[in-house]
Image (cartoon, rainbow, N blue to C red; front, side):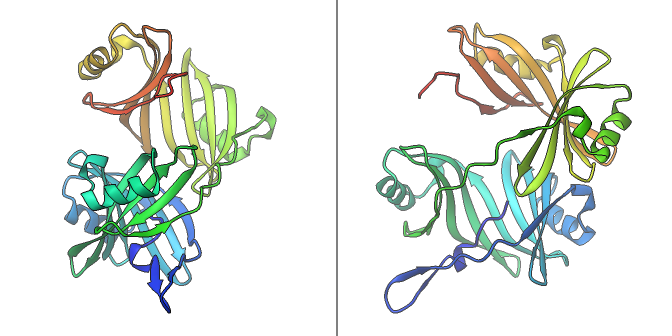
Length: 311
C-alpha cells in the first residue's frame, strides 16, 4: 500500500542528489473491521460514505501507522492514519490525462515508449490541510521492466526505483499438506466441499492460500490468510443472474463475445460477505480470451488485454 514518502525521497548534499530510502517497515494485513475506532472515524470524517476496501498495520520501530484503501465518489484512495486518528498522507489514484504537463514531459523523456500501470497524487496532511507533494507512478518500460517513480509537481524526478522483483510463483499444495487452520475455515463455510486446487501465494509480504472448490455443484474460490481468516470468496454465477447494468456494459464493450465464466467476488468481514464486483472471462469474436472486471452498477473496472494482443 503506502510505499515511500516524497518528502523524504531525496536530499541535497554537497551538490549531488542523494536518494534516501528507508528500510521497509513490517506490514500486516488486517481486516477493515479490526481497525481502531479512531482510525475509522478519521477516514469516514474525511471521506463521508466511503467504502473501505482493505487495510494494513505498518510498524516502523515503535511507531504504528494504519494504511487504509478506500473508494469514494468513484475514485480510489490510500490513506495513512495514526492509531490516534490523525491522517498523515492521502494518495489519490488518477489517470494519465490528469498529470500536469511538466510531469508528463519528464516521464516521457525519462521513459520513452513506456506505459503507466498506476498513477497516484500524494498529499501530505498537516493540521487537516492537504498539500500536494508529488506523483507516484508505476512505470512499465518499453522492455517490460517495472519501475516506481516519484515526480515533483514541477516535473523534477525525485526517485526512479529499481525494477521490482517478480512476485514469487504460486506454490501448489497437495490436499494432505493444507494447514489445519485453512481446512477448518473452508469446511466451516462449505461443509462437505471438495477441494479441487490449493495454492500458496505471497501477496504484499503476507501468505495467502488460494482455494478452488466445488460445493453443491457450484464452483467457488476462496482467499484465506495463513491464520485462517477468510478475506474473499468468489462464487460462480450464470449469465442470466448478472445485474442488467453489468450485462449492458459487457454487450456494449464486447459485442459478439461469448461468456465462458462469471465469478461474483465477495469481500468478507467476519461472517459478513458483501458482493464487490464481477470477474468475467470472455471469448471475443476473433477467438481471443479476455478477463474483465465490472462493478455491481456496470462500470468497467478492468478490461484485460486479449491473449495474443500486443497493443
